[in-house]
Image (cartoon, rainbow, N blue to C red; front, top):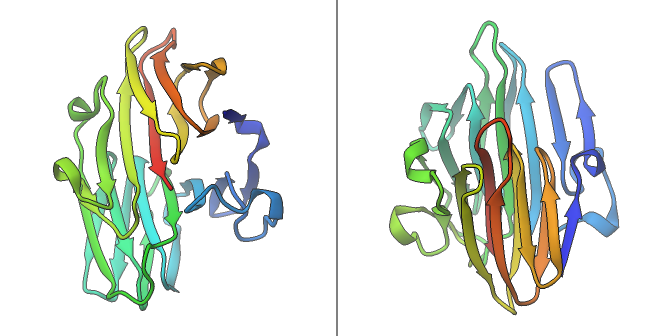
Length: 239
């Protein structure tokens, strides 16, 4: 079963310092019917304005994954990490018993676009940890590259949940095949461009900001369909 959520159906939060599109209930957006998808609690598409940031704040018992789409996001936390996250970088924070962090856009003129994903951990009360890794475009081109996983497979960053996050840059008319398993869920989000998703349920056209939530067995094909360049997408396999 495939459920498509269009970009327009997301909740928009537009503040002076940050523009966000929430795929699930978050902050001032409270919809009990859209609180999570399996272990996936949040999928926020953020644009942080120049010289703005999120002041230091705490998290507990969450797996927080950040993907920088464009610009540079400056990160600092109370584990001693201080780093500039460039576009193409994935960051994981396993909050566990507690982590405090802040993010800032140091640029004088350019926004930073980043996705932030929250997953429930498979175990509470773990020691907090942080990691980050840059994934060049060529590594993601026309393939589903695992970038964060509960197993750390194929060099992916490791977090505490039985899930895997993939990134892909998919050229027009190129195809990816993904075998959706009966007991798993899949969340696909189009970061930019256009793709077509096909399985026994039919074919669905997705554009920038659209998402698909998939359950039950589905031999899925994802095809790039854009007329103005490659599409970029994120796929999350989760319980």
